[in-house]
Length: 504
Image (cartoon, rainbow, N blue to C red; front, side, top):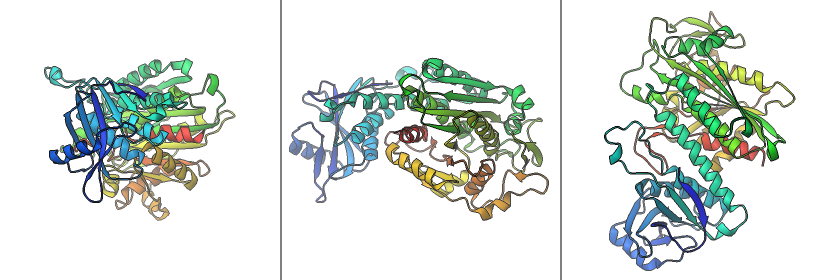
């Protein structure tokens, strides 16, 4: 991860990144923030280079006081550029500058939010995943090691906190992306638990207020976790359930609120006996994106020392084909006693989530401090991609106020979520003639039906959010902004911001 600093002074880095935008008359304007440059000659240079001003455009020219001058597009000229636009522009520049050690960014920074966005985008754009390269590893460019954000606001109180938060966000986004990109030959439920355990230790472990509990396949079976057990029973790699709790310590010990985060952790999804087509199945290593996001979020929240209690739950299983795999029409018992007729073994994510949601509520409401809300995060349905595409996630809820709080958090984090309904008339399609409910229902509106299935396991009085991140979790297209190809880390920033705003 790069080191991030805020600075107000002479540029000493080898590479300088500034913004540019297009005026209404088609001319270019240089947007270099608080750094004074020869804007007229630079704008002419952009025109000579054939710049278009489209988003994600990055152009490089030899520098004068720096080795390299880099222009990143901000699109149409504006009196104030949104933090997310600045985040993406900084990320696009970082992606284009792999192989450079030190990079300075001088973009418009009228407020703390803008500085934070630039610092985040710059660090998120440095991500590279070369862990499994062999002979070609030495041919790959190295990641940026040092990032400087130039702004006069660097002299303001608490400016150092902005850089520290951006580094924390970058660190845990990297963890999420690495887990998603890891091949299923290396990431099983067991190794997922091992990696997270080591990450918790690095985050400070018990001294940081973090505690880890793990259920193995025998405990899951004997304690009645029928969903996780049923999904994982067809695999040679047995299932797991991991619980990471964070209780504030030290100055943050006075806890203000308590949330539970639950993430779907299917380390590989073949579809089970409802086998998926071979085309595209390689992307199913990303079916644990929700689990990675909630585990990393609780560690980030602990590192930020936020005065909020968080329980993160990750039900982990590998959905495979074998003579022990769950069959269509099997009936299983979810933790807590509800029975489910498994009509489709490929609708498995909701089964492991149901177990974990019930357990999270049971544990979360023990003691004097009760849950203020619960959020599940899952690459749950292909219907989400059909409805919202690959860059916008869905949010469903039983509490409009909680959803509003979350959407306000996403405005800050820059992650795109769109509110979707949970129509009661679709619930009847989940009725089963032989069990309490079936795991699939009406095909039209499948994303909403999946949400209604999960809602069955949530007490009406507990505010709950269901985040379906199926499309945005894994980028199979081209890199854009600060988003690489492969695992994106979606939902992590919003989960952190939701907790931060809840206690601010």
